[in-house]
Amino acid sequence: MSSHRRRKLIRRGAPALLSAAALITGGLAVAAQSSAFATTTTTASSPDSTVHTHRLCSQPSKPGYMACQAEVRTDLKSQKSLGHKDTPKGFGPADLQAAYNLPKDSGKDATVAIVDANDDPNAEKDLAAYRSQYGLPECSTANGCFKKIDQDGGTNYPAPDAGWAGEISLDVDMVSAACPQCKILLVEAKSANMDDLGAAVNQAVKQGAKYVSNSYGGGEEAADTTSDDKYFKHPGVAITVSSGDSGYGVEYPASSQYVTAVGGTSLKKDSSTRGYSESVWGTSAGGDGAGSGCSAYDAKPSWQKDSGCAKRAVADVAAVADPATGLAVYDTYQASGWNVYGGTSASAPFIAGVYALAGTPGSGDVPASYPYAHADKLNDVTDGANGSCSDYLCKAGKGYDGPTGLGTPNGVAAFTK
Image 1 (cartoon, rainbow, N blue to C red):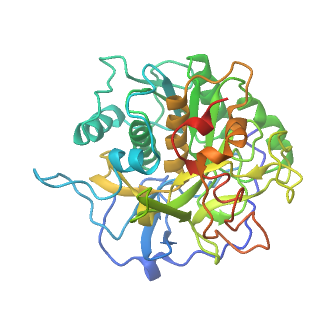
Image 2 (image 1 turned 90 degrees about the vertical axis):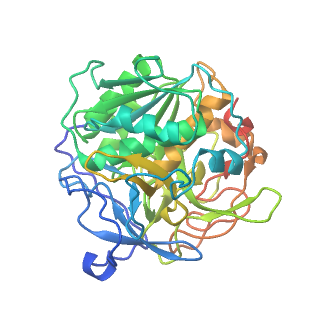
């Protein structure tokens, strides 16, 4: 895709953002501002509370560029260090493994690739702190578990960026939470242009990764969608993509027919047999929330059977993404250590880790099709909405719906052939 082609972000039912002055109530000074940080603080709503968040990446200011899909809670103070009895705020690996019924010892030697733009100079150090805090196995360059490369496969890393560094921290921590035994390959694109990010996806596959997570998105446009799908057409590789953080509306590359589009939920502990419950991340008023809808351009895959969308519907599956029920993440590049993050940038790498737990995909398969053959092996999310529409594309219900797809992991059986 030429960087001169402009993507037009499709929004349905999303209200204008409120001013930062009206929303900031004090608390967390997340990091020194970088050019990638959003300049507007937004409000994220869960069924039970309203919290204040800050998007780590601003909406693209240039044609052909993507934004990361991560948000940080600004109504909670960051934790620079923890006392002996302190624990980070937000869900940790044990919570997520319990909520999604995941095996703890699967995924050994599987490589999950993370594709992001720009460099996080502290990625390996911060990953070590996260894994040490939660008693996860060491994952370092020294023991062969962690590897960081540029989009060409070398070590000529791009310029660092605080917003994308926060995204990278979220990504590697969520892969660690889902699959503690997995290896992690971080591929850093030299910019957030889709051509560079696409080259990084190709490089991840070239390096042998069978699971590739992408936590970014932009608007759909016909010529771009047709052209850019080549970056994601990798049979035998599970490629996950965040569905978006702006509520009802479709973003690319989540709308590609070759990827698993990952929506988002609000996750809460309760007294049920499962011990947790989930609803759609978002509200019927729109705004912050998981992206969903009907692609205007990308063809409907043969395995997707919903009747209200003639082309590709988003999403396929989901996991926790609501910052109000968010995740503990450790980030120190122009940031202050432990914070609570959310966004579908959390759910996409988590689902990539779940695919890795499930085992190597069939060599000619599109692994996005697997959950459709095993929908009964997922937690069906039936409550909530991410915007205003007349059907399942923005409203949860029994079976398939846009914001959460077929549901969330209940073990790994839905992610195998």
